Image (cartoon, rainbow, N blue to C red; front, top):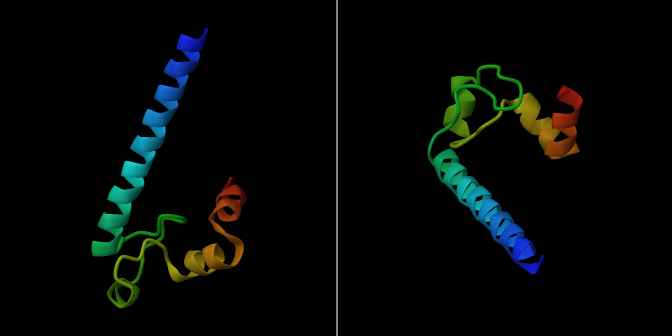
Amino acid sequence: MSRQIDQACEIEEMHRRLALEEQVRKSQTAAAVSAYECEECGEPIPEERRRAVIGCRCCVTCQEEIEHYGKTRIAARRH
């Protein structure tokens, strides 16, 4: 039984490590290049915003909602 628990812990740790590596990769990419489409609503991000906010991932409207309500609440409202 303890071996199964150890294996489950190892798998969980691997999943956490991979998720963290993915977050780091995304943040490095996001810092360098602005998105052309909003990651939240899919609408195009205007060129002016992409130049003004290097690495932006969301349109102004969605970014304001994220900052006001938080990302989890925005995602819940979309579904």
